[in-house]
Amino acid sequence: MKEKAQRRYWGDGEQGEVALESYAAQTAAKRAKYEPSGDTGDTLNASDLLARSVSKVGTQNPIQDFRDMLSRRDADHVSEAIRQMCDVINKLVAESIKDMFYQKALDCVRELRRGCVVVCSI
Image (tube, rainbow, N blue to C red):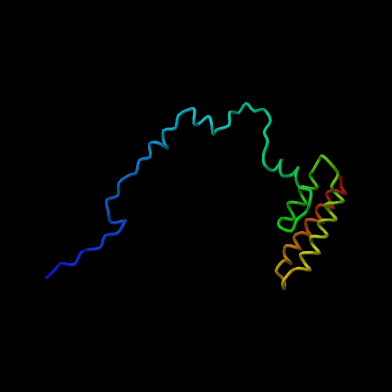
């Protein structure tokens, strides 16, 4: 009678440690390439760059677009941001299937109110 072969699985083998010396032993030159040097003086982050470039309140992320337009310092976009936010709210409610975008529209109304209060208090 022929003996049935025993099945072997990936986890059944000997568990040896995998050494990745090439990744663990980075040279100082490689590290310096990826790490900031610290002597740049002025730091610039992505939110600063994006805040400057927003000129329209869209339906994808209207709250952040509205905040970015209100915080722009290069020009006065307050009245335009308020008008665009009202248009986005109307669009979200009008194009909503059942109550699909109602929560987003309500969040936009809250942010519009908060933005108007902040702008009027300045």
